[in-house]
Image 1 (cartoon, rainbow, N blue to C red):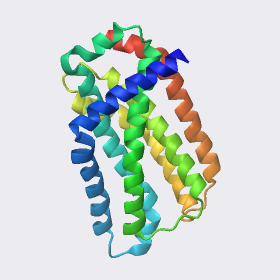
Image 2: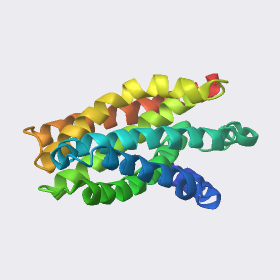
Image 3: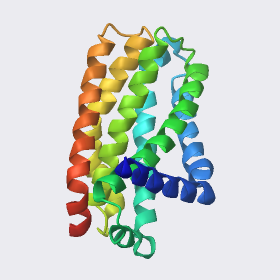
Amino acid sequence: MVELRDAWAIARKDLRIELRSRVLTNQIAPYALLIMVLFGFALDADTQTLRDTGPGLFWVAVLLIALLAIQRAGQIEDNDGARERILLTPVSPPSIFLGKSIALFLQLLSLEVLLFFVMLALFDLSVDNPLLICLSAVIATIGVATSGTLYGVITSGVGVRETLLPILLLPVLAPIAIGATRVFGDAFGRVDADGWAWLGLLALFAVVYTVLGMFAYGELVEDA
């Protein structure tokens, strides 16, 4: 319980910084909306193609904004040696990892909700299975947040982090994008796939990176 309380304290700290800076609302959110609008205009002449590719385009947009959010989270910790000062506190590294992952998760999920309704309006999609949509979005975002937090600290302190992070992280996030796209396709009734089986794979990915991050975060921070 103490670790969870500490993790929530770290998450609140990151979220307060984002609310004060308004980077999420003034920069990342407009960028996310622009991506979806551009996708819509690019395929406007073919409504059927829009509907078929909508789930994939949605998750491509999510990965792009996730990279921006992860880089932003790393910048917060690099400012004034904040990461080193946090390690000097009684808060354990697993709690720090969980807290930063929770903050990133909440930021990404809020953007996904916004993108989702924009996608429904632009691509003229109807949801056949709302429960599958909600579960897949939550579980996939957990996977993105935990792996992003882990790889964010791996690239911290590197002078070319802005270019190194996408190179390292995108191959890791590819299974999430593929699995979430298949689940969304099934939930929208656009593909013949077992969405629940793909959801299980997403859950496995999220669990693996959550556990791995909790065990490895402290060592990675010290090495960075």
